[in-house]
Image (cartoon, rainbow, N blue to C red; front, side, top):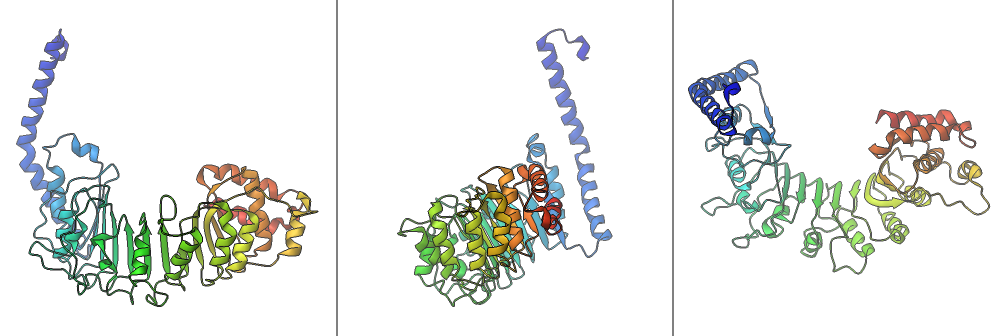
Length: 438
């Protein structure tokens, strides 16, 4: 017994004995546990005969406590056979996929977060005829190749005739492509939504072949100069993608390519992709001095309804210029530069009257501003937004940074009750209430 262990050596011997007892007990009950698991999974199908989706989420730490524990595999394998939709998420990290899936096919939805793309690519190929949604997240793992999605072990190319959504988050910086892909290969002919994080898969324009008439949404993250190369190859022209309405191109730093003389040149190239798109997201320029020129260029694309400039600081006057330049703009995502530069001969308390006299009404469609970061005190942010709400009659919803929400609500309420704003309090309180709902 533990109480009789007088030395450290005796204590460790006691622990080792207990460990062996537990292992022996586990071995005795393991067959019963596995049988119960299979019975449990079988009853799920009986209780929900129309089951369409299995979503699996777990903590990796619990699984790593005993590498020999196959409880998870025992549970997962029969679960994956219950429904044609698989969602596999692990919030604590990724896990090597070792569950045998050789007899699973005809899936319609695969959403996996794994270390090795190879086994999931094999699973996707077996369901190529039925698959409609494919999402694979591997992060910075260098294991496996996206090439395995479109060519099997015999060297034959695979087509996904029903795939509508393809999302890949994979950074194959050291990926080696076996040979150029024939121009006649069209693996994704009916894509509607394409989201790529990392470099362009397959090393060329393969992923864009044959779907120009169906593509509706394009998201490219950390693509560096890939998009410029695609434009040079003629993949994107002003008329090539008639249904493309959402274009989001984001980079961690800079604007993606050294071959452009300026950010404005690069922005013009991005806007030339689907010029009638309603939803746009862009990397920012490297200087605040670019913003008026940026707005001037954006004004040439009046169909924009949702605009995201996640790293751009907009001043009050630049925000007004932007809203006036885009008559259909309803949602804006950006940062705010909230120091308000007063017009000549206008005192701060006179600013609300000045705004109403010179700008109202404008931005009839403008409704919502998502603010990712501010560059001034929260009190300045509150006044900034109230001034904009005075002249934009439908601007009723603002989402401030989460860490500033409580202070923002206080400052917004205080500003509404101050001179210049209190006469318009009923209108301005709509902004207060909608923000509180956030």
